[in-house]
Length: 142
Image (cartoon, rainbow, N blue to C red):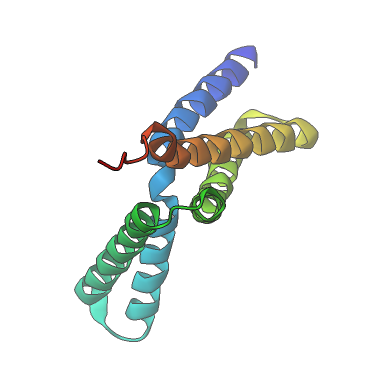
């Protein structure tokens, strides 16, 4: 029983690392998936739905990059980062719940692990999105 719990904790840590790496892409992926499902259910077929989903995800990610390049006020950049980090936190919660459901028998501890995992993924996504803004130096007028 202890070995299963330790393996569950190790799997949670590995999935948090994977979620940290992919957290920036959570919202474009979710939007692309939603667009693909909508296209498939309206009769576009599997290939057409895949193309629609790929284009929708690329447009969402392009919008993120465009907004970060054009918005200068820090509060607006923070709002954009939050819009992209909140789905990452939800995805992190669901990811941890999928692992902890089988590994942690107590419902209270399962929810504690899920909330902590979701917070870690959401905060890491927010920090990762905010990092390029902090690393830039303002342009000096010559």
